[in-house]
Image (cartoon, rainbow, N blue to C red; front, side, top):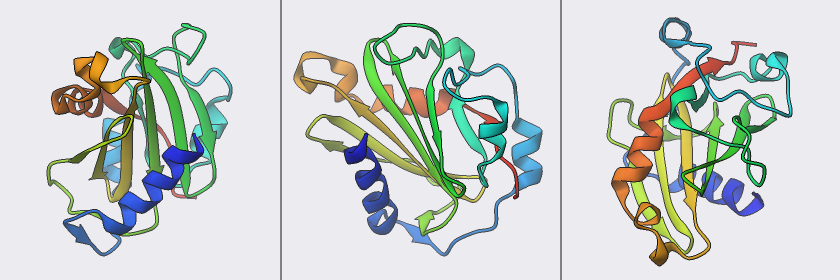
Length: 167
């Protein structure tokens, strides 16, 4: 997970195109919020609302499971202005990270998808916050999902607002 956080921070600094930090659009985030998500198994609802940006988690229908356990849900780690959620989808490791401070991709632009040594990463902006989704595989060449941008875009499309608050 440490590598994913470092990659997330680097992606925020070097992602293109970039714009100055935007205000969080809480009206849109609240409008889109749902309870039909893969809920954290290691934290309660208050942990999601302690994060000062819209928390995006996979929709319940996406089939996210707890890494190494196979139970429905995600592992969730919050830090005020950022968070990381880890899960597996189709047997592939997925990490979702969000941050409210920094320079992010231009709102409405397509996710910036890049390949890395273990799979792919996608950086995007939603509601005025920056997000990174990382797909990691032990052998990326063995699974099409690990190198196919369509898979990571599908993960991004499955993300729903599960919580967060202005502070």
